[in-house]
Image (tube, rainbow, N blue to C red; front, side, top):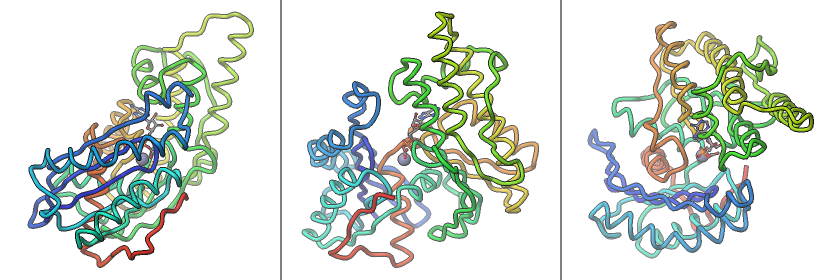
Length: 333
Ligand code: KG4
Ligand code: ZN
């Protein structure tokens, strides 16, 4: 069946067409329009600007998604849309657009949770991947472990107690004057730096739990940068990025090892924008190999926000009987 899907929870407006079912999990088109260039002028996402950019982009990218896939709206069997969590004004754009399109054309509509969508990106990259498995979602808004019992049954096992991992990368990147969002630039600079140059506090607050805390680490790095600046001392951005990344990857290694042990799962799925991080991908691969576990990460183009992942999860929600009513709304958290 053909699934048309939408995503507008933050600063990306996205539409995709998938062919799902009969053993197929195929991306026919995956279009993304981003307001990141405008947002970068402000060093972060301005919700009002994001909503207005979604309104401007959504019709155009829908035509583009259908055209690229070589289908028309008449061929679409299912519409899926992210209805939370995210920025409420941003979410409402795709929710309302998808609702109108679905009801005007008599096509079933399913709402999709954004986090579930990130996990489902892995079904598109790994065609044979099936639940149950352990999932580790790392993004701009989330840092959580989930027990994925089935395609539609998720249980959160642990989460960050404060900031998300991506927020930590982005805030540090902003103080260092890196382009927004900072995660990708920090990843690149870290490759060139000395990971032992600066010792930062670990985000593993308690070794006996799966909980993280990134706010202390974020503050420590920002204090380090501000102190150096005040003293007029030179800062090696490469070394700071390498040390920050090392501190984070060491902590992630410990927590994922613990999560594998506690859950008993031998399949580990990583998802969300931060799963694009080259250092995290490499360290988790080596960890999983050493523990006899199998690691699944999305291809780079499916790590960040996109609509293909929403279509994939939407398909499984549809099979499970989920349908949106005329009163479908968005939820921010
Ligand atoms: O999943 P996503 O696109 O949006 C949310 O749902 O939050 O994740 C965005 C986050 C941002 O914090 C961005 O800096 C981060 O993913 N990110 C990275 C990398 N690429 C994107 N963080 C670390 N390394 C990367 N290569
Ligand atoms: Zn996301």
